[in-house]
Image 1 (cartoon, rainbow, N blue to C red):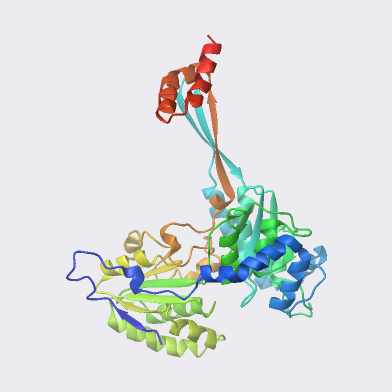
Image 2: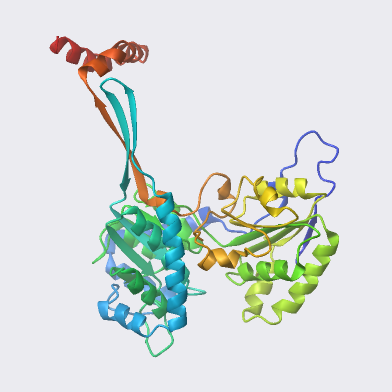
Length: 443
C-alpha cells in the first residue's frame, strides 16, 4: 500500500546535497488556489455579517439556524451528559497541558545598561482571541483543550471559540450546534462565548466581527484547506498562529523498531483525513516489508478503512529507503514533519540531532496519539514543511513582548552623540534634534 521512494544511492557521488524535501512530496494542498473560493465568502461576511454566515452554514453544513451563538444552557447540558470516562480523560489532558504551559510562561526581563538607562521587556497577553476547533470529519474535542489552555495560562482576558454546526449529533441534540462533546469541553474550561460557525465564514466572523461576536486580535487553531486559506487571506486584519493543514507523521526507524507499533502509528494519523500524510523513513528493508504486512492486517480492523486507505495510498504517504540513520536524519530534517517519531537504537541521541519538526516523539512508547491527548504537549503544530521556521501553539502565541524604555538625563547624555551621529548618517536630522533639545534645555 505504501509506495516506496528509494534514496539509498541519491547524492552518493555528488558534493552537492540532494533536495530531499522535493523528493518526498506532500499532498496537493494548494492554499493559494483556495483563495479564490474563500475571498468572496470573507467579503460577504464582512459586508452582511450574520445573514451571510447563516446562508453559508445552510449551504456547506446543511444547517439552517436563526442564531450563531451557542446558548448557555446547551453548554451546561453538554457537560452534565458527558460520559464520565471522557470527562476524566479531558481533565487529565487539561492538567498536564496546563502544567507545561505554566512552566514555559515567561517573566518580564529587566536590563540595566548603565546609570539611568533601563530597558524592560514586558510580557503582555493578547486582549482577545478567537479559537477555531474543527468539527467536520471528526469532532476534535482535544483541540478545545489545546487552544484554550495556553490562552488561559497566558492571561488572555476575552476568549471566543467557534466550531462547525452539526446537521445531526447523538443523544437527540438536534441540529445547528457544534458537537456536544466540544461544548462539554468548553464548559469544563469555563469558555462561555461559543459560536456554531465553521469554515472560512468562521475565520471571517472572528476577524471582522459579526452579530454578537466582536472582532478578535488573534485567531488560532487548525482546519481544512478553506479555513487555512481564510487565515492566510485575513492575516494582517487579524493575527494568526500558523497555517495548520492536514496532519502528517514521519517515522525514522531502524532494524530495532517494532513493525506493529510503526504501522499502528502510521494508521493513527491516516484516519484523520484522506489528505493526511504518513511517511516511514528507514534503512531496513526487512522493517519496510514487515510494516506493509502489518498495515494490511491492522487496517482491516479499523473503523475508517476507506479514509485510511486513501491517505496511505496517496502521493503524500510512502516508505523512504535510506542508506543509514545519518541520511535518514537529513531526510526528516528536510521534510520538517508536523509529528516525527524516532524508533531507533539510542533514540534519545538520534532525536537530539533533529532540527526541524513540530514535535518529536522519542522511543517505542511515545506515539503521536499520546501527544494528541495527554502528553502535556500541544498538538496544534505547523504542517507542510513549515516546522523549519514555525513552532507549535504555546503560551508564547498568546503573549506579546513590549519594550519599556526608561532613561534619565544622564543616561541619555551617555549615548546622545551616538544617536545624533547615526541620525545624521541616515539624513534624519529631526531625530538628532529630538535628543539635542532635551540636553540643551536641561543644562
